Amino acid sequence: MSSSMRFAVFNPATGEQIGSALDGGADEARAAIGAAYAAFPAWAASGAYERAAKLYRAYELMLSKRDELARLMTAEQGKPLKMAHAEVKYAADFLLWFAEEAKRVYGETIPSARVDQRFLVRREPVGVVCAITPWNYPVSMITRKVAPALAAGCTIVLKPAETTPLCALAVFNILEEAGVPRGVANLVTAANPAPVGEVFCTDPRVRKISFTGSTEVGRKLYQWAAAQFKRVSLELGGHAPFIVFDDADPVHAAKGAAAVKFLNTGQACISPNRIFVQRSIAGPFLETLQKRVMAQRVGNGMDETSTVGPLFSQRALDKVDLQVQDAIARGAKLLAGGKRLVDGDLARGFFYAPTLLSEVTADMRIYREETFGPVAPVIVFDTEQEVLAMANDTGYGLASYVYTQNLSRAMRMFEGLQFGIVGINDINPTSAAAPFGGIKDSGLGREGARQGLEEYLETKLGGFSI
Ligand code: NAD
Image (cartoon, rainbow, N blue to C red; front, side):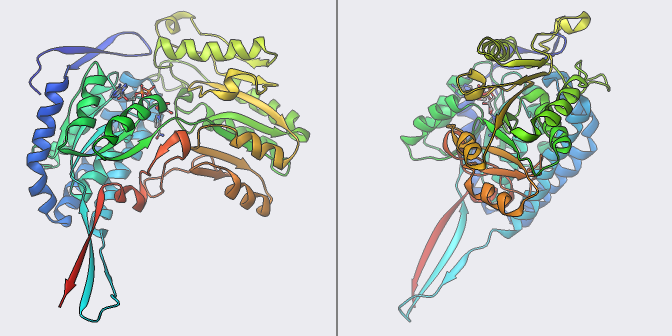
């Protein structure tokens, strides 16, 4: 990157500057694409075993630097250290998984109706990939794209979120140390994402765009990329329903809801955004959930006792508070939290009290909009049919959760929920080995699993007359 301008990076728990990154723009994006374009033929022609070995080395290096990376993540992004450690492991898992999958890019032979003809199908890397990643999972969202791209034989240019460039730099240093050749994996950090995004989507040398972030930005990138028919993968927002039927244990379900709701301070695209509980068990469910919400310890993620860190920005804080106040004004009952925390050191960061709302109704913003914060809104329902309709009544379609002990009902919900991911009595249906992604406004394509590699491969047919 040639730009000598830098932008500052801050700790969201303290407001302190913790570093800076190069401020790249359209020129740096074009130069990086040029490097990736030049490096593509040799990387694509290198053997799958060689690419796998480099990814495996990166996996080992990432694990060996786990503590260092986790500390950087907590300082830059805010999540509690324990969760940052878990994320580094999750991020490394993608390097391992795709190191293994690199060796399984199988082709096909197809019988022809003509005896003198043979069909051969070969999978080839799509070419130069440009990727854009968000701040909420600042290491794993990178490996989830870079690992399959490199495994497939693609070269890549990545722009991380402007608020978490230091984690991205650390990941790219690992790739370099693992022996990934120059030009194969390129990083462009930028304070202003739009000019870089525009170059990514309009430069004809780029054959694929992979984006994780908001639905609004994803839509814009998709439109830009359409002019050149680039391949596009989009992991966008979510509005996950969390459904608890009265045949489930309400205490167990409430513990699950609290555990997944406050992960990463609610700043996860698969965070439950609407918690539906069947009327006859609403009492014990809410009682346990309230206890769990009130037991959360809010603070700087570096403090080992913190379970909930800061929100990411003033804008995020304002959005969360607006949804909470709107719900209260429209009749929701506040059972915990409901305000910004400003006691002592908390005043320096963007801390919001873990919040529980009951009697939430469809006319409230929180029922319709993604929250991306530590707020659990609870809605009581009566029948399976009613809750399925309410759960599906959203433009989003990423994650959903169901608690039930009834096998037939579990299957009906699995089939009926219009979401890319359904957790049945399971609050963590994610893994490098499993296809992650959404439908409708939650995006296109899948990351992780066998399907995650497909996104970076083209199909070529050979017809041979003999
Ligand atoms: P965002 O869309 O503002 O930012 C995400 C990335 O896009 C950042 O790198 C940002 O710099 C870049 N960006 C922003 N404007 C751009 C533009 N005009 N051109 C090019 N790039 C641009 O999203 P956010 O608010 O930072 O992140 C939260 C959102 O991401 C939530 O909606 C969340 O659900 C979603 N998300 C989805 C997943 C998933 O896997 N589906 C994972 C994490 C986050």
